[in-house]
Length: 235
Image 1 (spheres, helix red, strand yellow):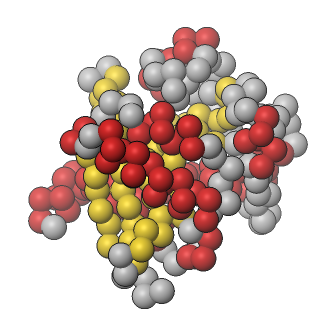
Image 2 (cartoon, rainbow, N blue to C red):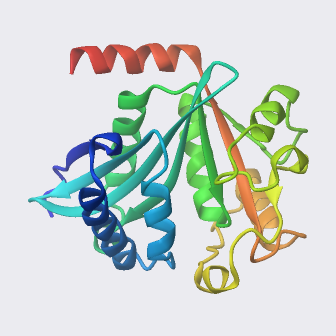
């Protein structure tokens, strides 16, 4: 592993059904290598959604990470949702996730990033990214602002099953099917800082149950979007 990753963006609107089927196989194989308990049907369904893209991270032409990306427009704002983020277990800690995040942001420049997870480690990683580029909601310390709630309520059903009835904590109860929830690892965070304790409490020691999913929304700072635009222009 030389850590010199090559990223390939693929616009799925330009692909026919056979090409999409082939790309779905690659996504699924990578997910299996990361021990992600995800179904082939899930990937097939999301690959065929409108405004979808794939980012492959490659090392010596081998796909080592895959991100299935969806671009949305709500209230005249661009939203980015990632329905699949999978990194080969053999390269964890290599920095590919950070570099992939930078590549995705530079090539999409959203106003908001939307995520969904049942894993405290995934929320923590998102919160650390948010520290650099914007503000994350919910932060588990204060109510979700009306602006963010309005966006959450308008998310499409493949992200927010509950629509306008989503609760004020942006939690989807019993969202994951039982088989996925059984195999989905909830990784307790190590550390004694305030954020770590708060996240562990919310995901592991509260009414948040194994099949529940947490929607999170990161609002990007204006100067970060400007930097991304400049990077896209000059690279």
